[in-house]
Length: 82
Image (cartoon, rainbow, N blue to C red; front, side, top):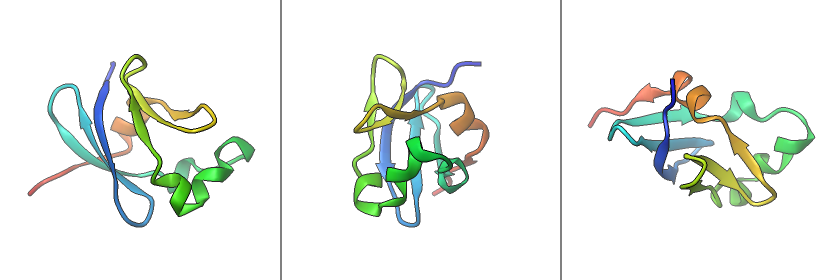
């Protein structure tokens, strides 16, 4: 199943608010994904907040070509309720 991301907002404690193409908003804690040298920069909160959406790929990215699979993010996130 493909869950493209159209908007991202960094939150505190390494959480992200993700808005998917369906319009659904979900919150994900990315700390479980920060393993290995490729993801080491994400442990820096200033770097973490540089997240943006790659519209072509439909996922979130950071400088240095760091990205996470949108389906994995969806599966590991919780619905955002207001």
